[in-house]
Length: 377
Image 1 (cartoon, rainbow, N blue to C red):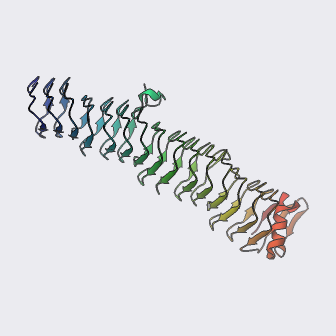
Image 2 (cartoon, rainbow, N blue to C red; image 1 turned 120 degrees about the vertical axis):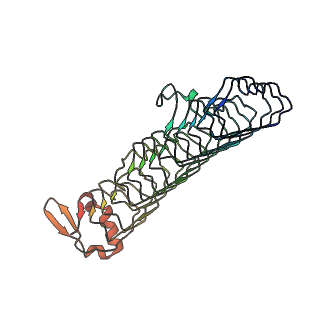
Image 3 (spheres, one colour; image 1 turned 90 degrees about the vertical axis):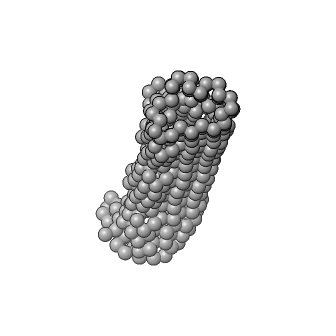
């Protein structure tokens, strides 16, 4: 009950068994010797100031469904059990001793400012159960002062596996691992994480939303797995450090603005059905897979550093001006030259014989013939 063990200064460890349903107000107030607390899964209510003044608690193992604010700011080790569903508002605010936090799969909701100013967390793992994360006065208010991890300025690694990856506003990240349970990376999730150098995108992600990685200037390599079907507007806007980009076969919706400002990409490996212009004008190496069918208009226009290209047998359409202005393109290898023809104002012009010679084929791609669409049966 209320004040049951108040000021029991000799207590060092407390275990609340699963059978207990309520911890009364001030139950352990001023138990200044407490260093370790375990709270079982049966607790449904923890009273006001239950652990007030317990300033030496270093370890908390907690397994009740809802974790409230406990005021244990001296924590160094936190274990959240698999019975925990919700971490309430400000639950661990100001726990500067925490360095590693694991949110188990059972957690579905994290409240506003739940880990605010836990300034020494360096590694964060979020399980697959998370469905609600409160960002501000409403879930989508954008009030950065109330995001669950506001003030956590040392988090360098994030391992996240919930279905929708939300905007967490953790700008100190260097590594992000997005698990195979994830299907959507939400709008602005990692925007302006300028120190981010390594991202792993899970095999079941289908959507990378608008501005998801916008301004992540530290990224040098990007791999979009086969299951990704959509990349939103400015998803990788101004990722100016990117050098190598690999795009899998599943992508069917992306925009010219998806990679706006990625001006230093040298190598593109692409295997989606439709290859479109995304502004990679610094390309020196282009590898197209056997899933590519259409190379659309202007796609590689003015890629003046490109010297060679191989057109897979799967390609059936090359849009007008696709390789226009590729002034250093000297070799073009067509894996199949059969049935290729130019769509000109005068009708069809068969060019399959000219394409047998890689040098002549390159000349066709970059010359006035590039002003026509190329098709094959």
